[in-house]
Image 1: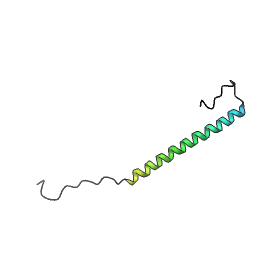
Image 2: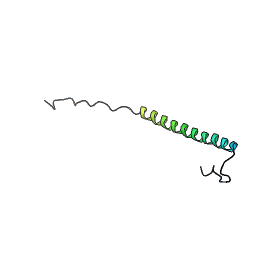
Image 3: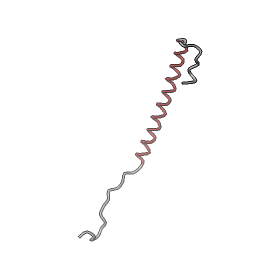
Image 4: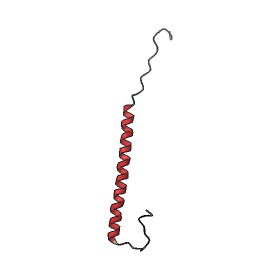
Length: 64
C-alpha cells in the first residue's frame, strides 16, 4: 500500500483511483487463487493417506 500512495495530492485523480482499484483487485484475486490451490493440494494429500486400520485382538488364548 505504501507503493500505491504517492502523497502528491490529497484527492487523487479519478482515473488513477480506477487504475489502483483494478490493480488491487488483481492482487487480491491472485492471492485468493493461490490460497485455494494450496488448500486443494493439502486436501488431496490428506486423502492419499490411508485411514488407520481397526485394531483386532491377537489370536490365541490370552484373554480367557
